[in-house]
Length: 184
Ligand SMILES: [Zn+2]
Image (cartoon, rainbow, N blue to C red; front, side):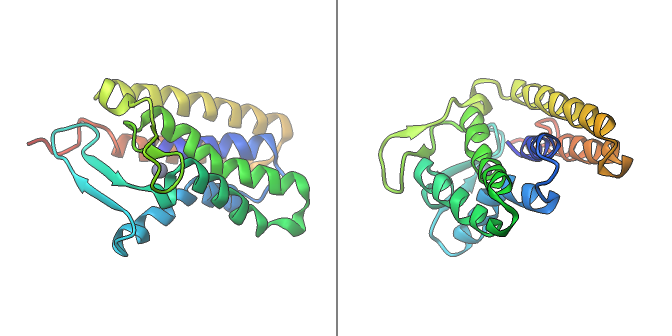
């Protein structure tokens, strides 16, 4: 999942408005922020698979995305917010871990229990539905966006710009559509 993570972030922010927006949005993408440098450093491996959904194969992402490491990263990142109180810490930790839960739906069995574990999780919607996954993620984004918008109106908060935030996530999702992916 890609844009959907940020939609989840908006919903989490809407649920717990006292959690800092930047912390929530960095949190939902934190595992992918680790994945990039880990690949560059050779700690993790991925390669492109043009024409085969989703266009890449995540060969070894145990240090950023395994269940155990996801939990650990959730605690590590949330610890940065300890001065803001227990609710914010729990919210940020959940934001980071939400990444694992959402990836679990999409990824084709590449999420290890812990680094090196041969037990790998993932329902594999990317491969089960090479185009359907996009509609699933769109529905998720719309549901989160509707919740965020409803909370923004009810609380009179988020600077009255909730539509821009939801629109930006939708644009990200359009840019990630399987119809734009290179084939062959
Ligand atoms: Zn990820």
